[in-house]
Length: 290
Image (cartoon, rainbow, N blue to C red; front, side):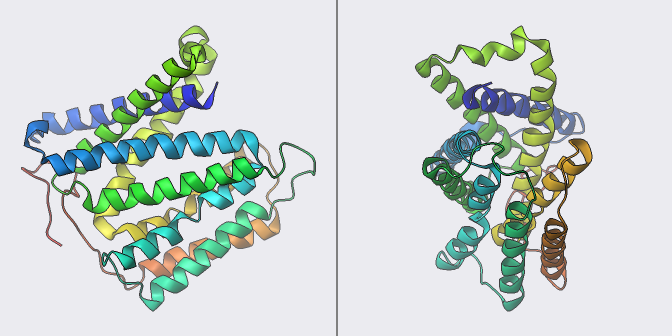
């Protein structure tokens, strides 16, 4: 599949997953949000979040095709540092000593995990400037998305916000496919063998984690969420070793320990920072005060 086709199905299936979660909440008496009640500024912020979703996914999946995956991941996962710096400049958060140490540990551990593999040389693409640059573009887009999720549309509950972002992203990918003549977008319908992994990517890689990520941004703040999200490449390397039989170098294991140490340090003694529209359960507006 092309990056456009894959990201389209991933976002579309993820949107249906969120719809199912919201429907389950509605069956328990959770009120629905009427889009007409959302302020125009929040609507623009939601549209911007959807656009950043399109940019970051297309950028990173295209980068995977052009450059070494380890290098692409290394570039992409610099976004927690961007989020921390932007949060400070915007007056959103302060970077305490504990958070600063956790950020350094997590970034160092991520770099070791991603770049410390013992893969065979010459296998797959090497360094490609455009691919590395696209991964950095994806990193910047992810940082913007995190910051928008915190303050861009505070009256929109996390579930509805995630649904709009995923559905808007799917629409964006579909338009891109039509413009570029991407007939391969229908591949999962023509080849059932492709549908299963794409469906899994939509459920486990888009719908559920996107919703939880939005909830976390609002519950504990953008910096802590971004640092904790650096567990993602660690989990990816471990799963590659368990599921795909890829080797796990001792250096990568040490990097994983650094990321876990950062997560533990970050959580210890840190109070939650709830913000608007955090919960996804029953409630008239699902808001909490800062």
